[in-house]
Image 1 (cartoon, rainbow, N blue to C red):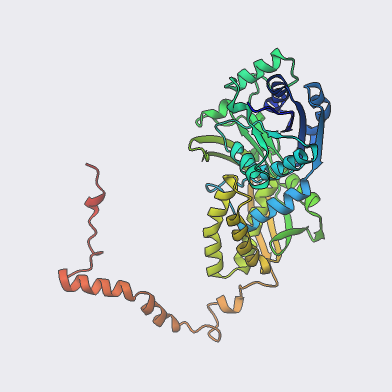
Image 2: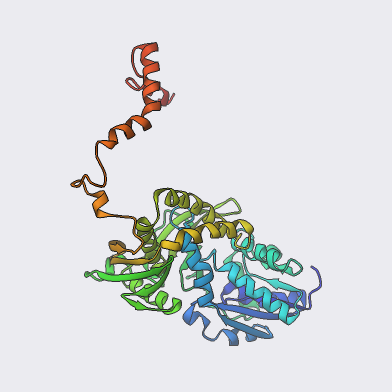
Length: 418
């Protein structure tokens, strides 16, 4: 352990960071300053300052970062169409570089030699925090207690808290590891560690069960400007109230639940359950508008780079030149993604009910089968001959050599098991 006089801890008030305040004071003999990012945790922030001071912190910073979170991290990721491993909308992933950014700013302002976090040595968050520190201020020391102490489980952590009289809310009966912000809430650990176990209904915090959602659907219209949501049901709204409203509508209709087994950056698989109500609606709506406004080549290539964008965000590589370069491409694609999407919300489903845009590339007179003045159907013959030419040549060579195209009698024995 290198000597440290002052450390700034990324503090949530949960089990891990609560005991870390005490542990840092006991083991590093240093002043501990806590920092909490207000990303929309709502009641989780209640009484946080008192709790931090009771566990030994000298002070607690709380910064309202909700708008910065949405405009600088959430919306660009939605614009990119980034989804990790088919279903994860990256709610925890893109929150970490923002938290770390402000953690570092406070450490610099306080003259601290180190920052600390409560991420485990098995997870992704340690990478996200520490890569951000490397990008923004590599001179700061990073303390990761889970890689130093002899605590190995949440049961051990609870026992430590009881020994040192650290106030906690986790119990052995409710032992989920959770992360919450205004975009989503994640659940890990406990019964979820067995992927055969169905999540218990009382585990969910943000969303109503789809089976208990209203029997009547809810209609909502989202207005976009250059890929950014700016209005709901025709009324212009700022990012935070707009997203809060989307969250409420989606949660009431049981929208946004995902249960997945994902591949962590460190190489192991983990099971997580996510609630992403408003984010799910936004993702579906944005894709629907892009289907109108992007041409085929741009949209297909954008889908290709979306996978890489998601990988970068998931792996904690937000502050990289590659992410900036991909953003430059994405922002160019969004110049015409302006318009309105109408959606019907019903028992966990987001159903497209309409979309329109002044930049729409869809033309009814072009697509109609009943008009010949825009598109002559006879033109298709030459087009088919051109794209089919390689297949035609291959078949002719096979016929000249064997008497039949090689696709006439496929050899399925190649797929038989021994």
